[in-house]
Image (cartoon, rainbow, N blue to C red; front, side):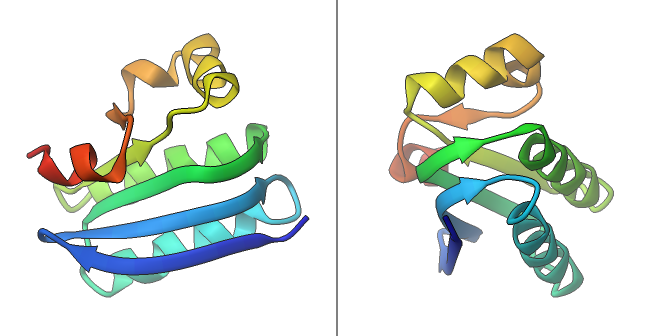
Amino acid sequence: MDLTLTTREADGKTVVSVGGEIDVYTAPKLRDKITELVADGRYRIVIDMEGVEFLDSTGLGVLVGGLKKVRAHDGTLELVCNQDRLLKIFRITGLAKVFPIHGSAESALAAT
């Protein structure tokens, strides 16, 4: 399955809506998008994972790498995730304590 990425600006944040599977084959596409946004001076990023069907360790690595990139500029990388199977991955790996995880894009945008 392929990975789809759509980007929009809202409330001073850049929302990247992700659809499909984030795995060893597609994760570089997401990494490149985050790198491009940071290079453009966008340091407040929300990754909307509502359309994500699968996430592996490579995808987690890309998210952690993205977090490091925005933090280097005092930025934030927040996640929108409301699927139990994905939330379980974040809990098991301890990343639920690292990333702010929201149940909807609206709540992510409302957060400071």
